[in-house]
Each structure stands twice: as structure tokens, then as C-alpha cells.
Length: 163
Image (cartoon, rainbow, N blue to C red; front, side):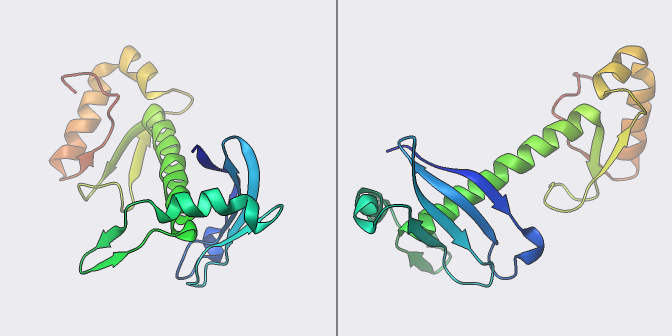
């Protein structure tokens, strides 16, 4: 069963205890339901476009998925939890695309060893990082060495070996 979210709208500023979002749920390429979470801590609502009978295979599929273990407790898989996981994957993909653009733009660095915190970027006006590396690799190496010398972590996977 191919299940995906499309037409996702994420309202980060409206998110309080859970993510506030709306989307269309597609099953095997067919738009089957409207999904929504108000962001106030409640579960995600799965509203079929036709009737609930049309979503029975989806609900059955979700109930047969493995439960999720968090520390000392276990969550049984439900349709709303499955949709929440789809949304989390959508967020990760969105963030990944954003970071890829940042890596192409310049040197991404932070004080912590993960990008989950805030980060900074050293960039060059009207030039991508790969262009600057070709034009002046010594300058790029100097910036990287200076940042590392100050205790910063560099995250760019697109730096050539030796940088």
C-alpha cells in the first residue's frame, strides 16, 4: 500500500504541543482523506473524502503495523499516529532540502556537534561554495581552519577531501 501526504501546509507558529498542519492523504495514488492537526496536543484527524468505509483498508493496514516503543511505554499504531509519522518524515525531507541549499551556498557551522540547534553560514556574495573553492581554495581552507580553531563544527558534506 503506497500511502503519502500531499498538499501539506505546516503552520509552525500555530504549533503548541503538537505540529499544526493540514494535508491530503493519498493511498495508491488516489486522494482519499483530509488530515489535520490543530497543534494543541490532540490527535490528528483523518477525515475521508467519501465515507469511512473507503478508508477501512487504510485503518486495517495501520492497525497491523508494529507498535512504537518510547522509553518505558509502547504506542500501538493507529491511523492518526501513522499520519503523524508521515508528517514527521515530510518535515525531515523539507529540512534536508533546506540544508542542501545551505551547503551549496556556503560553509555551515555551529557550536554543537548536531544541526538540531542553531547554525551559521559563511557565504560569498553571488558565488556558490563550489565556485569559491575553484576560484580561491586557500581562502575557503583558511575560513574552515579559523572556525575549527574557535571550536566550531563544520557540517558541509560537499567539501572536497583535504578541507
